[in-house]
Length: 316
Image (cartoon, rainbow, N blue to C red; front, side):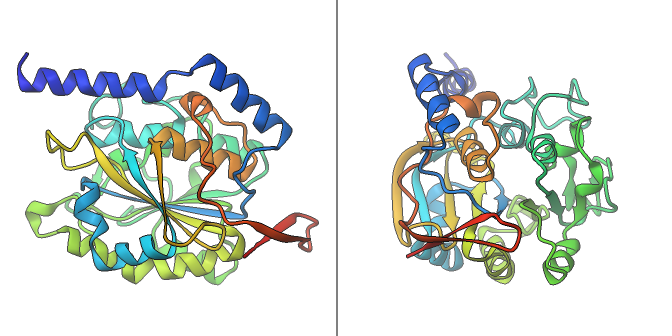
């Protein structure tokens, strides 16, 4: 078998491994969620930052990223699902790749009407927004903009017909929402193709990406408060044949164990399941068949209710 054929076979096996629901596990997880017995705490805010095309070892040694690992919880067995970028973004947003296997814009078969985080949040009365650098206008459907600093392939929400597209905002709106105390329950942050270290050939190296994180993530961590987290992850690795799509994923914020390294096998579907459980949404798509992330959370020492009557958990 040629090398390209082997890589495709490995990708197919990985998709089958992460996407297939084991009947017994699925039944147990479904019962756990229904009874509210899962170890994932309910969170007020989650911000997901997605970076691009770097391996676990390339990024974990960068200064700011290393500081997040030291202060938060990281995963040593986190793997992207496939190559190239676009299907990985669909996986973490919509619980499946929707048959998308490339970066073509518009995505073949779109618009889609399947379940996704935007629709699920709106149905549950929760707020969400996606903040994308160099997005030209609210709800824009352009494929590329500003010399391809913005590319639609990293914004899967734009391809769904069953959500509010006014929640798709330029990145500058995040600071305004934070200042107005209007941070949504769920936010996705998509740096541009230099700051996410995608365009390495243009000098947009892993150092550039780490510097961007150092300049922007501290404000996000402050904004999510004591009962929120920032999730930092990568869409895929650099396609190195021996790396097996090994990427870094970090959870940062008061609810997680500082400096903890989990060995649980993680995919974009596992992260999606955590987001659903933390927001009180029924896990959907292939996320429903994933094991919950149970080992990274700090002990709950007390609880109080906020002015809206919602239970807020306080951590050691």
